[in-house]
Image 1 (tube, rainbow, N blue to C red):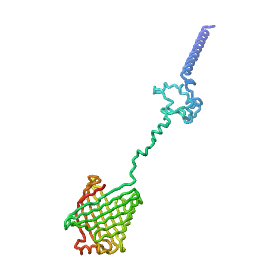
Image 2: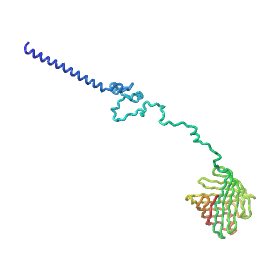
Image 3: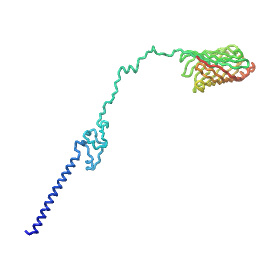
Image 4: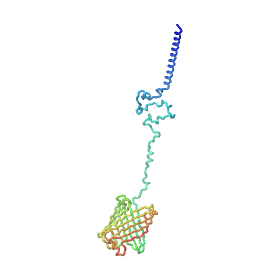
Length: 342
């Protein structure tokens, strides 16, 4: 063998030796990387999503994972690796509602109602110790007690009412009149039975006795009184006397509260007759209208002095009868008085 053949064999042996070492190193490196990958891969116990596909599985199969259909109640959250979460605090899965029984008892259960609780809520009533309003009541009101300066001295007038009875049935007394120069010009008294027909209205039936002017006379009376909408107090009464005489009286008043104690009271009253009565100075039709405006101050609800102005005017034959007696057909006067009730 010549020198050239020896050199070629030597080079071939060195090349084979180098190739053998390279394959061994490559196999060693790949085995280490495989071991490291297996160590880093999470075990089946750490991600125990029974019956679910992982994201890697979904990527391999090419199908998206529908989390809305996943049954999280079967997930083993106790084995999950929470170390990769940014929040180091533990997760309260019970508060998240996973696996909470529907019939779980409240934290502070409501105690059952006992007989003692019922007795305390609904105590027995002692009717003998309760105060009831009396069945019979009474009320007296002097709406006007007033005086004024007249041509022949001073004048006085009154108008009042009183009742006694129950809420439904009452006996009513009403009276009004005038005096001037020490002489009674007019006065009357009514006694009537009143029956409540609504919370605001009463029907009245009874008798009326006129004492002045001239001779006294008696009337049968029928009427209605009460409070209309907007708190207007109304009264309408018809009278039937002897000899076919008939008459009627209409009255309306209203209390306008300027303050809690200062009250302005407008009032209007109209008298009608359906037959001439010269003896009493009354003509047919509208006899007279009286309109007043009184301002009172209530020191108490029971006692209220007032000052006001009153205008009175007669019409038709009634005005003629007054002129024949030397009296004016119309008159305006300033009055002072007091309103009281008890």
